[in-house]
Length: 190
Length: 227
Image (tube, helix red, strand yellow):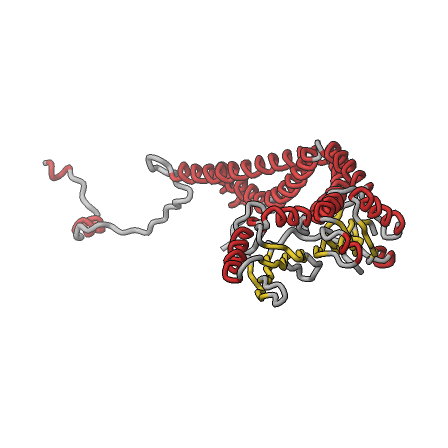
């Protein structure tokens, strides 16, 4: 069963609204089909750009006070750097302990354990420079020494300490004398 | 007379008239496609109505989607403008933040370093303040070595207790309780102090004791890794 052109034209002329709407519907459905992927793609792009935009806005928002805070930390770090020791500055390190000795009226013997090579081999911002100390004095003097060491110019922490009665001629002369052996880390830079 | 006026039927008509009265059948040659629709509401009206309705539905659907697409693209364009405006400043802020993190890490490293070991002067001072009259501390050892994994610091006290042995034991126990409940040392202690050794000094007759105090673990040490 075939339809001739005349019949088709006649049918269209007889049903112009129905045919027109059918053709229009088909055209719109085709357009909807071919453009179906655009919305998900645009939506995904919008989500991505929205997230990026939000992140940038957040960066600006939270970065607003950053220069001031950065300035504060920079100053703190300057202060920290001025309080660090260097494994290579053996004389300066000795001087630090001798100053404590003088101020607290104790007698000390000291050995720097961390070598320059060990300090240079360390990674990170800081390296603990280890010292062994042998401090002799009365109980108040030892407490004074420790207090000045732990709260002094350099960042110090005591790993091991032992306080016991001193021995030797000085101890015989002054029975209040005590000996304190310390293993101390001073914070240094590699 | 009237019978004379009647037209005489032909023989065929007479035969047809004489035939039985039944519904006549004949072939239906009407072309319904060309005949006008004589229903009250013509079918074309409904067909056209449905066609228009479908076309409208699809149009509304497509229009809605196009509007949505337009909105999305407008939003994307707005985001593009924002991104173009903020990118340079954000990159600057990111670079500054990276520097900030480095600076911040150094400060926190120092803080962690200082909190990684007990403050020995504070402990020694407190041990001196809490020492009972009849107990003489012979040695105080505070151990907080760097180990992997980290171990909790501890204090080892070696002391001599004056007085008779039966009373000295009670004094030693009381001293352990004093240490455990001390306002300064108590919060730092992990578990009750243990008397790890107790013996009488033959020469002096004094009770010698060793008390081990385990301290609570402290903060992590600084991140100074060695090669």
